[in-house]
Length: 502
Image 1 (spheres, helix red, strand yellow):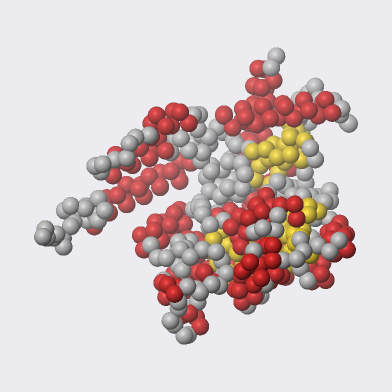
Image 2: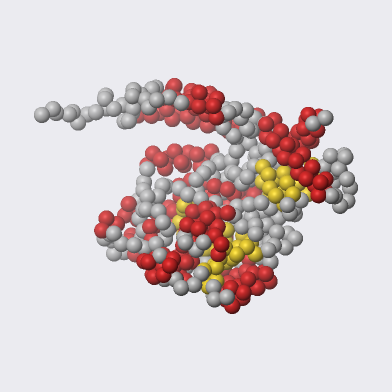
């Protein structure tokens, strides 16, 4: 029989490095992080590369022998970094993407090193308690009742899915949980505005509710749900013997940033005994900014609220969050006994398990970066940064309104702005469909040219059938001057496109 020495350090040093090796790797990595944060404003936002070029640089067979960390860090610095889009750049306005913070990056490193699995209190006592603390802070920021509770998840899509699962279980009970959707005798209806994120439709499909049973409610001129139309839809469904289940309100839509009339929707939900869910993934934390706080009146009345700390808490992905107004009311949707998960503790706080409130069993220590970022910066600094983002979007809107070569296509509610470029040849006043289509094509080409130039980055949206240049300010580094540079960059891209088409 071959004996194996208990001391494997010399054999498996790559898996179990010495303290000195860890210090060396950490120092090199932290030096890159510091330099990256210091120079990010000077980087081109988007890479000029291709999948084939990157594959040529990165692809290799599965390594049999290990390589030195220095070589791996070189690949990261010389291939991965320049081949990445730099979402932390102050003029990256594409999508709804946060820059991350240095302290949260350190928190992610520490969380990965400790590597707890936050299934239940017994598995990670202090990390679970820290998640409760971070959730309590978020509840306070949102104005929720102290009895509310919640958990961190991978992102807003999973939070929306989980909220609809809880709503369905409250309405249908164990029959559907045991026998499937066919056990319920009537179709269920979910109500959401035409501006609602596609993850609601995906959740309805995955839960067996069905995408066709998500009734899209029209919006007003500010892209907010029409509450009268909501009531009509509910009454129509009741008359047709369908069962209204849930209304999804938006606290910051992904296209225009619109905030639905939350208090009015909450009153409708109470009247018809619907589960009210608020998708606040983008906008919810804007309640920390004094100028935006009134928009969120009524949000705390919701049965559930989905949020993304990896958006307006400026955290690196991934970190979503779901808040329940009544956690114990949601618990039956997810609680399921198995011998290998049986909890022996009898003290309620120590018998707590996150698997009773969501679909995940294994869960990473996302709470550390939430707690560390909020504790390090403080809520006032976060609120001031959000207020600054709102101000930048409003400044952009003022600049567009004062210009002759741009026009806004939607009101600026939070920090999302939608506009387009108008060439000197564009007809004034009402335009024909052919003229509008030509403007759509021009602005689409402008967007591509802008992204390739690397100084500013916008994404796209469709507003009332028209192509829009869309941006979202979600970066504590962004200033009013960046908004001015953005418009200059768009003008240069427009000149380039127009010149190329002559």
